[in-house]
Image (cartoon, rainbow, N blue to C red; front, top):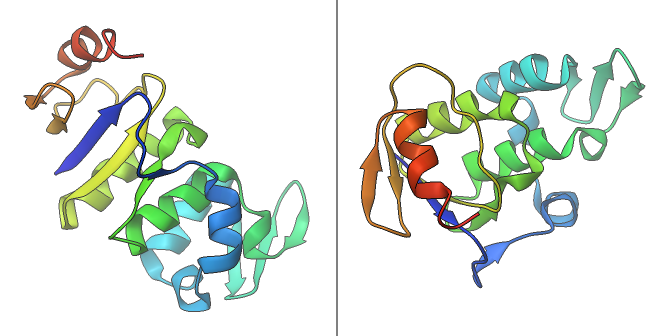
Length: 145
């Protein structure tokens, strides 16, 4: 299940780009799930662990990916950390839910992310409530962001 803490969180990693730059591992990039995320969010194709083909930027290293994709990759693989996912756009929301389907994940948000019209299960840590729709999420998140 995806767990969200809204607002400032002392133990969250806020500078996900710097953290990614120094801590990602090559095998993360060639993971089939990650390749699919990169294609969907950045519209880019992983050629190998060190080269991604971007339609906008050309051939780039993994550090050249968008902040959203870098954060998603960290959320997937660095299970012991809590990352601020406010670098992620709404196009990353479905991926956060997919990652959390496999194993519980906690993220920090400083904004309201749109998780779409479909039903979902998200545990809001601020209030210890589980929500299943954007309507429920908005009514709680509005208190904190």
